[in-house]
Image (cartoon, rainbow, N blue to C red; front, side):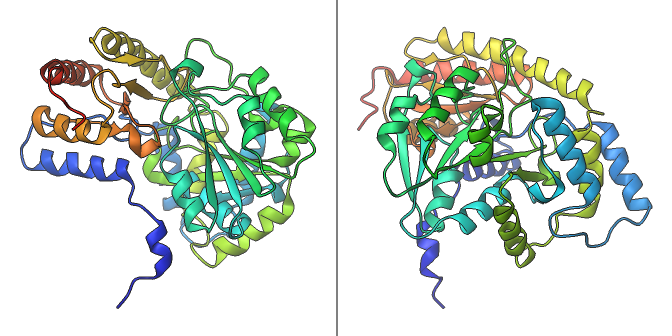
Amino acid sequence: MKIAQRMEKLSPSVTMAITALGRELKAQGKDILSFSAGEPDFDTPDVIKDAAVKAIKAGFTKYTSVEGITETKQAIINKLKRDHGLEYNLDNIVISNGAKHSLFNLFQLLINEGDEVIIPSPYWVTYPEQVKYSDGVPVFIETDDSTNFKITAEQLKNAITPKTKILVLNSPSNPAGSVYSKKELTEISKVLEGTDILVLSDEMYEKIIFDKEVFTATAQISKDMYNRTVTINGLSKAVAMTGWRFGYIATPKVDIVKAMIKLQGQVTSNINSMTQVASISALEGEADKEIEAMRKEFEKRRNFAVKAFNDIDGITCVSPKGAFYLFVNIKEVTENSIKFCEQLLAEEGVAVVPGLAFGKEGYFRFSFATDLESIKKGIERIERFTDRIKNVDYNE
């Protein structure tokens, strides 16, 4: 039996593969410190777990409408209004099995063969893979440390062609933790005025912000930006609900919503009913104290890790304004991030993700969504490894 040709367009997730390898080695009894997964080490807040248990005991265990129950959709609407002053109706919301599922649905229903999708680089590994699987063409805009890994309006203007269909924005970003300011988003919005380009704004990490930075939702920039933006969000990262699989979109474009419901109805139907009920607690702010406590701890870890990496000879690290990743520059040591990460895991038992997986060679992604003691030990091992290979021609 031959596997369908379309699968040849799809590459395995490097982050998932390294995380799985780290777990496998740990299960074999090896001393492994993993900084590869984008998963908070905190437990889901009790108020959310209690709501799920209550729903189960009450018998709320059946199918729901494909796009989610009215109560949860209303909680999303309330959240977007409360946090960003954005107005949506029930027919503007679809709940899916995590933001990754939301994105897959969107690319499948929006992209025709040859449509171009602009993606800032470095990027979350899933964006270009889903675009290619949907017969689209990823167009990358390169960024680096000097711009805090953010694109400029001028770069966007130069990347647009008659085939451009979508711009993907991710703020705060994975893997670099970049946060676009209101001014930067306004400049980007002006480039898009007069075009039919849609913006898919991935705002999954919006609650994980540092240095008193102010998060700006893309859709709140202007009426024009509101009308062209599909906001993608969820509860996995900020509320430590990775396994609950809750993602959603919000858009004034009802035709997109209807198409997404039709597609999802033939693939997964609704997300599990208990998660929908439990998520209302998080969306309505009942876990805000826990979210803030997690954010503070992430900031503490970030502060330590950034300083520790910048104290290593040959390594530099921009301090991210959001999310829980560092995108560490190892260009003075090697441009071969895959070899660096493979040897680091083999020799020191430290799992990080090569920058090439995110479209950027000469870096690795380090997740600080783990305890401070492990972070200290991990960076000590990385320093030891880096010192050892300095005099080796590591680019061969």
